[in-house]
Amino acid sequence: MTFRGATGKLRNFNDFARKSGRLPKTLTAALGPWVGSDIIKPSMSISRVSYTLDSTLESVNTAEETAMKMAAKAGFGEDESHQIAMSVREAAVNAVLHGNAYDPQKKMRMSIEHTGDKFIVSIADEGKGLKPEEVPDPLAQENILKQSGRGIFLIKSFMDEVRIRLLDPGTEITLIKHVHGNAAGASEERQ
Amino acid sequence: MTMKASTRQVDGITVVDLSGRITLGEGSVVLRDTVRDLLAKGDRKMLLNLGEVTYIDSSGIGELVSAFTTVRNQGGELKLLNLTKKVHDLLQITKLYTVFDIKDDEAAAISSFKK
Image (cartoon, rainbow over all chains, first blue to last red; front, side):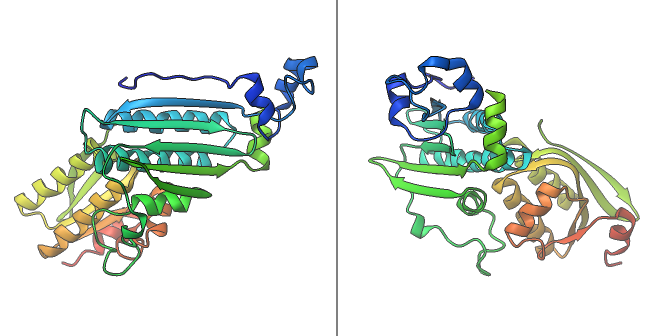
């Protein structure tokens, strides 16, 4: 494993109280009398993990596998978990290959957050910055047989929301998948 | 699971049985090297059997496209066989489904190559 500083953590209770979202049934039961008090309200962020990873292919695999596990844990089915994991893989490849260009001095940062109704992954690099308007349309006739240029397109196909933000230096891409009824229910059952 | 490729000859057609993941890194390199080696031997008719390919990313898609155009530019034919649902869906989304000649029956695929 090459990632450094993995910090899986539940947010503190005061943070929970400030966040919107639903509290899982079983967690509500476990927390019992605290829920609804000034300390915990039935609205919270379930979990957030963040990683700092080296600019390597191994990190890409780590990011993908982590996303797959957390998506399944959040209650997504196999197809949606696969879509999330593949989107994370594509974003991680962009960060490591196109952004950081495998530079050992540059890191990829990834965070995965599961709120009550959203599964949010952010991936940031320290590269020269991606300008989305300059990414060619891979479906255009003149691009259809090009070897590369489909990563962002696939991410947008698989995720519900995609945001790209230029950093100084680098690029941050945020991928959001909405938690639908079945996934939310499964999430509550799995807590 | 890394990717494996093995080749066999059926009625003058080179069938390449692929298994595992065609992704950036080893998987894409195995596919690239396999096609390059076959072309170097003079094989121009290739049927890529993707039945055991569990996963493919945009790099893998790019490698398939590259293999297709490389073989075609050398006067050959490259076709795909036995797509899994995930690979099928990816080729649909990227509009490559109509670019490749895709088959789901090996015997029919073999006989579809130009003699």
